Length: 318
Image (cartoon, rainbow, N blue to C red):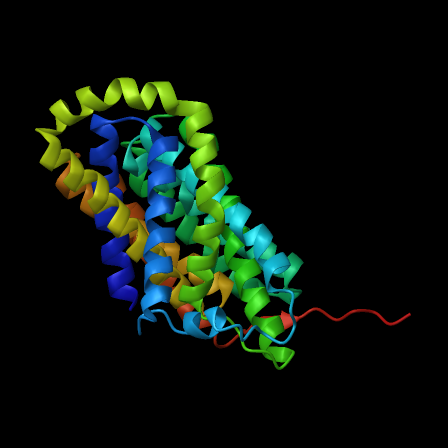
């Protein structure tokens, strides 16, 4: 599952950047992505597809016992929608390598949020193992990175939003399980948040880019080589985005929020390597050193976490 997630994410990022090279309308692309995911989920639920576990029972009216799913999903919906908007704005503004470099800070944010929101405490060796991952990914892409305030701020904002989404999803699943309720499956959670995020993403796109998207669409079609090629880029990007997120939520169901964040760092490392090959970016000794440091950090984390598992913080009694 991890390899499939890595592959889907890498091909998605490359396809998405090719799309932005022809049609730089990130708000509109975000709305199309989320609408595709929402429509796919609704159709799957309607057909009671086997690939969407738990959705049929939701539609049949069997809700988790806590009865607080709609309210609990609201912040996840907001984080999902805004996080994707910020990611697309960053991706359209800068190179894949630069956006990916900023994303290297995500494991630290996962640690901070899971510690604050879930009450987890991580041992010093585990925390130190995150340092080479962040440093290594930064060094590996440093030689090809060009600063952009829009790209930097968009990527950092998406880091915070996606980290919060992952921690909140994990918290919701844990609460339902501890309360004896029927926990939502990861794919059902993803479908529900997509359905919730799509409407405001469409409204945001109409407010921000309606005129620009319409005016530049004919030029984008010509730049892509024709309607068929442009449609392939656009809907291929949609399908890959949906698959990437499905796999991300599925992986999150089996690992901790921090492990998910570290796996995301490794996934970005993979994306950097493939993007260098596809876009023929020059490779320096500094790139190789950074990649080695990052992979060493991933190995160190995987070795240390089972030996120093996170613990619940103790609450002092009154």
